[in-house]
Image (cartoon, rainbow, N blue to C red; front, side, top):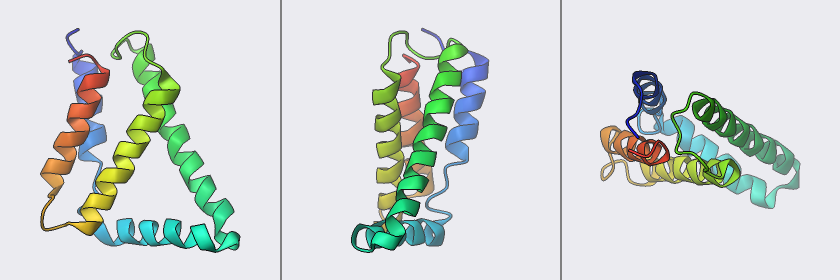
Length: 121
């Protein structure tokens, strides 16, 4: 399957907008909040709400991409939502933990490659 120009443009917009390395302080704050929510019950519902919102956003992006015909047919969108969400979390964690080892261009390249596998390219 050859990705459409629309898919390529959307992929670029999504990956170029992924900035955990450039927004390291925000990413570190998010990580600290998530960790704190594990032991502070008063934060738990907010942390769950943030994750639920992120998952919903990722799912909407995948659904719209599927509707445009740019996703490989037959993908399990629930599974792919979890997979992409986990990838974003992991890349953000690496950007916070190892800023000297993993730069923004490499993080974006990993995300673009994953998106390409969803499109069958």
